[in-house]
Length: 291
Ligand SMILES: Nc1nc2c(ncn2[C@@H]2O[C@H](COP(=O)(O)OP(=O)(O)O)[C@@H](O)[C@H]2O)c(=O)[nH]1
Ligand SMILES: [Mg+2]
Image 1: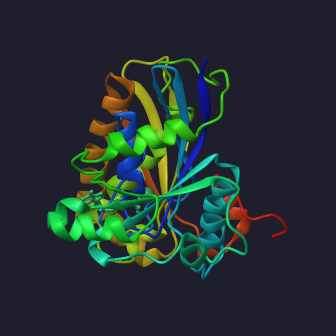
Image 2: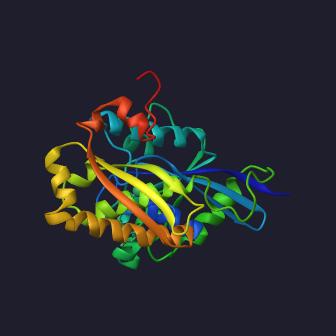
Image 3: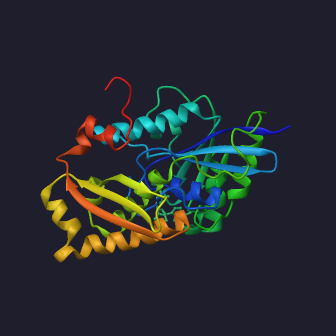
């Protein structure tokens, strides 16, 4: 008899959702960043151990949407939440006792699945603080997505709660999204690392060509920004910034495809794309129904 089901990792921006997904699947599937709102759409990881298979969705941070892209991000998180057999509500333990998921996510009703609270970043607080916090919050698990502490206990509980079911994926699958998707995310992550303040939030990455049949693998990608001034920043003095982003991103993509890559990276302006549903769809961000 096997168990299999869906798990949604949800929580506020920067709580450590993507770090937790990567920890669980043992690979860097989802981009992480000290800057909030790095995850824009769900990233799905598969974790199979023994007779249990978890299909885990990392989601964008729950926040009050201000513009179209944030509406799409919230909708993506809410959809994953609604689909899940088990919800892992992840909070930053440094911030003390969290509000309930319903309050944090502004939900009208509790989700269908069972909610476990993961009190993350316990590596940043003392053991007594950790223990009293865990005692205070029902069904909570003190963890550190960064060090791995407590993650096995959390997973053991999740496993117990999943329904009896055949596996949905083969036992050695880790991700389900395309190499194109992961490559564009790695380019965006590199832009987040190398750029200050508002600019990286305005970056969307589109893969125009991905030729795996060539050696090195040929990838042509465009980073779209919202304004001409952002384009200048992204390109940098005499192209220094774009070259650095390109070279760092290329190394990450080479790990992903286990081979040499030629990354042909461009910058273009698409004015105010984060507020434009059509532009967002083109970048693969799904808008909530009816918009
Ligand atoms: N100290 C500490 N930092 C963490 C932990 N988990 C995540 N972080 C950091 O918190 C930041 C946000 O993490 P990320 O996974 O991108 O958060 P997300 O927005 O919820 O997906 C990153 O700088 C992570 O390295 C943890 O357990 N301990
Ligand atoms: Mg994230």
